[in-house]
Structure formats: structure tokens, C-alpha cells
Length: 467
Image (cartoon, rainbow, N blue to C red; front, side, top):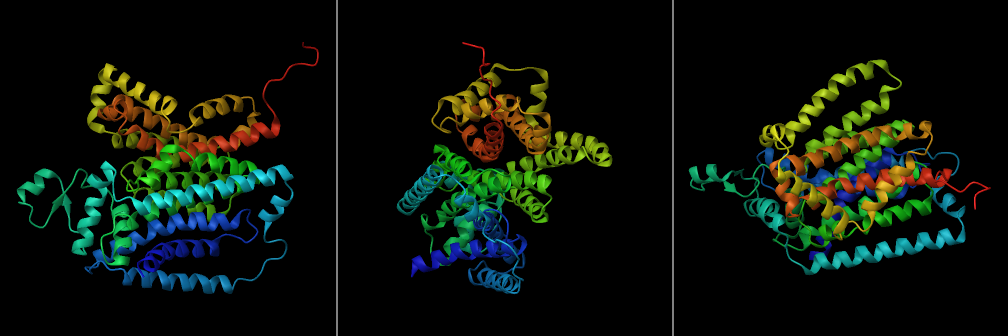
């Protein structure tokens, strides 16, 4: 019986997000099935905790039945809308048609990588089933709230240590980060409310769903961007097989995987909306930008980076946007600096300290030397260098997503080189976690540029007369 309710707790948010996305996405969209189930699962997993938040805000005890009933009603509504939709003329399964056009070798590679991903997800699932809550941050920053809120059936307040002492611990609780957003703890509460008991393994199954959903969303958006199926699957495998990302699933409980998935989904929607002007991509961009701010404090920072990318992408065609964008960019840059450890900004302006150099060395070791990202740290600079050989007219299509990622990487470097958080880079405790938040988006841009490079064969070649 426990397995049934756990599956129900996972199925409700996945089905809710997927069916409503199915209402928005046209039937002739490439890779439509992985698109609506990938993005839909991510949206559902982030939406259901907001139902619990609303339930608490209305003064009701946290329960599984009420949000589940609301989700079921919304699922039935979306199902009715889908059943009443008029069938479209022409082929409705462009993905199968695209796969048929590939060579036999490409088909075999596609299927091999898909099977390997299924095996990997299965093994990661067994890790979650067999292991209780283990990671340090998960037990000190996130599950503290989930445990208390589950036991009290209410979002009782968490305060800083001093406030907790002044209140003599009456009616308030404390942990290392009492101001963290509530979405991740409420997701764990949701899973435990389904079973009616505290289960540190079952409550972490959404991390496995998040990884699978990221893969579906990533593959489908590459297909919509014009990347052929096999190359899209190759880069999807690159992403989902990254060691540190897999570690955050096997040792579930951190928010960083969800932040990375949401930021990547927002970036992908930004790029394809600018390129193809599909309204539903704009909806995805807005939703994931909003959910980013409900996942972790850094989510505010990454949401802010989306605005410059959008401005740069649209400014070439609209003079008003170009003029307004200059002022808005200044505001965004100031907000980014304020968001990233404002207390350490003044010392940075005075001098570049040796401790900041330790932070830089920590970044280099974590990204280039440690077994966190396979060879992605070497692939990305190589692809970026080769992309400079592409025609300018081609590169213009990527200026939006590139702008957002350049600003995000700049904020990342500033955080670990010029603030008190450089300690988290020097001892490798924080730099890896924040890398997860950027890696999926960077991989998407890498895949897009690789597709352009392979299609145009821009790498230098020998001249016919050279020996």
C-alpha cells in the first residue's frame, strides 16, 4: 500500500504539469512527448508545494488530501480540454519521422544511449530506496524544516539562532539557513504526507524524477532548436551522466539539482522563444523564472540574468527596447552585486586579496581536475573557440542565451573569488553545488554551438596544395 501512495504522490504533480502543458503545446511540435512530460514534471514538482504553502496560509493544517484533490480537479479539467481539441491536419508525430530519416548507425547509437540512461536512472533509484537522508546540507538546512512541518502539520516559523534564544525556543525553530525558500522542504513534506509517516528514503524520490524530467526537457528543446535526434541524445547523455549531478540524486536532499533544472529550462525557453516566437515558450520562460525564486536564494540571481539575455536578443529589432534595456541592465547589475554577498563587496573594492586567489584555484581544481563533470570543462572552451569561426549572422541567433550565461558565470566567479564565500571554493564545499545550477544551461549552449560547427564544418583544414 505504501508503494501505491508513493507512486500517487509522484504521479499527481507529473500528470498535472504535463497535461496542462499538453494543452498549450501544438501536436506537431518536434519531440512533443518528452517535451510536455519533461517540462510538465518539473513544473508539477514545483507547483504542488505551493498548494501546501497556500493551505498553510489559509490557516489549514497541512494534509495530502486537499492538494491532491485540487490537483485531480485540475488534471480532469486539462483532460477535458485535450479531448475537446480538434485534430490537426498533417503528421502529428514528427519525431518518429525524423528518427526514420537517420542512418542505421545513428539509430543504434540513439537506442544504446537511451538504454544506458534508463539503466542509470534505475540504479540511482535503488540508491535512493536503500539510503536514508545522508548529505550534510540536506540534514542541516532543508530537511530540518520538512521534519518539523510534517510533525506539526504546519509551517511553524524558523528564525536565526539569536531570535530562537530570545524566544527560549517557544513556538519557533532554528537551523543553519532559516530564510531559505520553502519549496524543497514542502516537497519532502508532500511525499511524507502521502504515506502518513516520516520516511527519509521515499521523500527523496522527486530528485530521481527531476533528473529524468531534465533529460526529457533538454532533449526536446534541442530538437526544437533544430538539432538532429542522435546528436540531441548524445548531449542528453553527456548531461545526465555527469558524476556530480548523479551524486545529487543518489545523495538526494539538496536544492541545487532543482535550481539547475529550472534555470536550464528557463534558458532553453528563452532561446527558442526568441528564435521561433512560440507563445508557449514564453509561458515556460516566465513560469520557470518565477519558480527559480521559490527554490533557493541563488534563484533570484539566476532569474535576474534572464532579463539581460532577453533584452540583448530583442534589442536589435526594437530601438525602444534597446534604450530601455541600458537602464534596466544597470539596475540588474547592481541587484546582482547586492544579491551576491553584499557584506564582502567593500573589501573587494579595496584590494584583490590572496584569499581570493585561493578561491580561483579552488574553482579551477573543482571544474578541471576533479571528477565532477567528466571532460565538459575542456569541451566547452573548445566549442566556444571553434564557434568564433562561425559566420556572424549565425552567432547572432545565440546572443540572448549567451548573454545570460556570461553574466551568470561572471556572478559565479565573483562570488567565489571576491567574497567571503571564496572559502566554499578553497575547501570545495560550495563551488560544486553552485556549478550544478549552471552546468545544464551551459551544456545546452554547448550542444547548440556544436550542432552549428558540425553542420558547417568550420574547423581549419589543410589547403589542397599543402603537404
